[in-house]
Length: 394
Image (cartoon, rainbow, N blue to C red; front, side, top):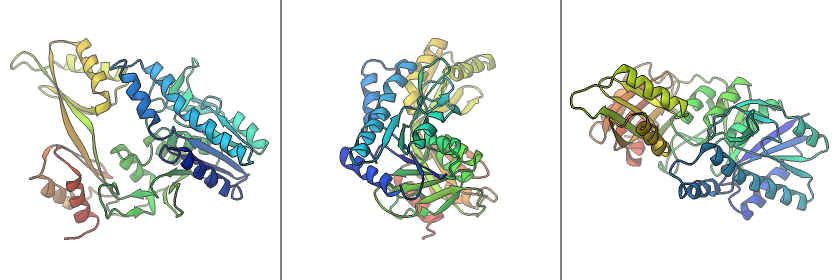
């Protein structure tokens, strides 16, 4: 019994015209699979608008209540798509994440799927229905609605594909695959036909919004290939699959949505103690702040998402008012590909391009990634790096 899982992002369902195109795309695949399960995101900028409305009431809204608020966007899309498909003569039903059996932990706004019990989905499929599931959400052990973090509908889709024993999961969006750089910033960015889970994980972790980071982990764990395709144009898209060991640079990602937090004592020439540093670190972890590159020498510095700056400043203020905190806009530039750090040639070329155009703060290396933390990285630098490292133009 072949099951096809299809996910449609916010840009694909942004208005009723596009919703009709999505419905047609679903119907076109009815002959290819006995069962079809569709996962949807909120329409267009719905989630952003809801966040803005909440922030007009509070700079740091209660996280549980935010999940209650944000979950409505996907429910609107799912019910509208189901109404449309039924009107077209196809038996369809919409289910919320919790109705679909998605159980999560209790980390509000960034929950992780713990288990999926798809009994209700199987029951509806048995009657020949197209099942439409709200992405991005589930339910925790005390019955509260939780959300999986921005882009979490991808994880819903791949998680359901794994739970339903589907061999692959189709992720539809307004782009026709995975590219060597942001095609909106780099005109000659190349579409990648195939990429390994490990390389795709690095691209996602670097800040690219092509696929949610946790959906890649699920795909690799359950051997479920992920196919990224366009909703609006036909084509093979890009496949994320098992290990592909080709020593080449696959992608360049510039993430400018992070901030560097620097903390120092308000007393001159006094360092922050190890005990105080660990207290701050643990306080941030207890409040589910995602921290990168936490360092403590004389002072403390670490990277966070800009969206968490107000939350972190509140935590630091409550922890100790004898500290001086500075927030600095930075970028995290990542150059990704298997075996990229086996020699120093690529790193030297990157440093040569950056040294006179930005202020490099830190360099981190993994088997698949060269990561540069710096000030002043813009799209023109990414274009030049792509030209020298991937297009190989002089």
